[in-house]
Length: 478
Image 1 (cartoon, rainbow, N blue to C red):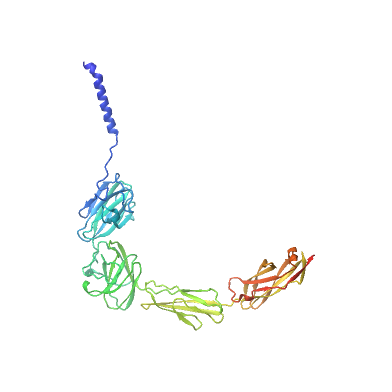
Image 2: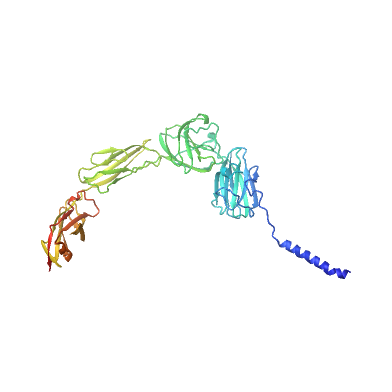
């Protein structure tokens, strides 16, 4: 009995073994990470925070914000107080991009970006970002990329030493420059913002007392500067405020304390570089047209001046070099005679800085005339005759294009062209050889026309630049 049952038992055992092997060879399907979607983020309760996780099985969610790609994981953070935060993916083994958002996670269309960043400088493929986190606002932090071993950390940025008005950093002298991250800065209670079109939240403070009356210019690559006087945060008087990307130039009174509130100009912080220097001079500049004016034409002048300090001009004064003057942007002026005139433009800013620019404007009457076109009285078909076009230059030595044309029904056709130099006050005879044709004979008579065009200049008296000869009678074959 045992022998009869043995093959059946062996078959059963073999089938189980095959099934076991087949089962062990089937790849397991790993589940996506718990924080694969914005609806189920990992909650960051406190800072500093750090984690390491695999994002290989993460997937992009439908409606992910524009700056995220491929596989995305999410974190959620709600600060209890206003703080600055730095997040980074240093140590990850794949190319990451990070974004911070706020809004309704169940409706991606409501999400608003605090910022996005990819590839931090000096850290290869990893990303880094700093921002201000307002108290009570829930922020959603996402890391995107092709997936791999993610190393993610978030830390609080300490407030700058000059975060408070009471700890304003003293500026000993100008020029002065300072670069710092204002993400960890806060807004002082009672801090004024009057006059600034952008917020001065999370600002830092600088103090400067000039020894004498002076004009200074503040520049920020990005951000806003507010200038105040006073002795306490709740007693400050507004002096001036910069606009985004425009230098701020302000007049300071000697021995008066001034305070500069410096912010990145938005709600979310960032790195700013604050520069304070003596106000630069404005730059006077202009151009004129035409470039070769004559006493027969008006010259148009255009002011091209600008102020690196960002101020406007209170006055624009022109001296035309012939005793005449004007003011304003774009005057016109006509000179009475030829000559070289030194034109000077002087500009003055609203705070009294000034500059001048001068140009020599050469006024010339470039005038040539065709005084005669000498032709034979008669000619036969096939004969070659000389046609002489005489050109005179009235005032200056001129390079002239001299054209010879012959009459045809309805006008004139070009025969030849020569370039001639005509000395000032001289007349030059320009000779052309012309062979008469049967076509000329069919007309019975033809006339020739001489034209003179000054090369490189405008002739203000063009009426005498064209002259037509007497008719030449064509008498038949030679």
